[in-house]
Image (cartoon, rainbow, N blue to C red):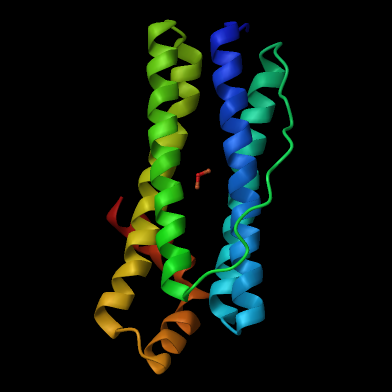
Length: 174
Ligand code: FEO
């Protein structure tokens, strides 16, 4: 299977963004860890692993399409945050950017009449819906429980296992 140079470049750009997301989430996890938000630290380190999986899916796709996956240099991510809530706001914003980038990629694939790439990208479309729901669900908790120290502590504690809870809910609704 061969892909066009346009698709190759677009996917390499996406590899770069996914790699940035890995480091961004590690930086968020690291800030949470040193601030005492252990539940959120666990959450963000797991999220970084997910992003690494996304990056590798694109890397394998290009390499198997007789193209070259370019492993990028990454800029230093933000390392300090003003509050736990602000880390999740930044995370949601980043996921919304990824959703847009994936949609743009789909558009390029469709214009190039590249059905295989369009099909490959379907997984990422569903994944982005899930990622945005996950972060919206977490941000809702701040609205419900509030932002007092004890409320934030309880939210943090609930985050160590939120991924499995949200995933389980989705399995039920499918
Ligand atoms: Fe790889 Fe969270 O987007």
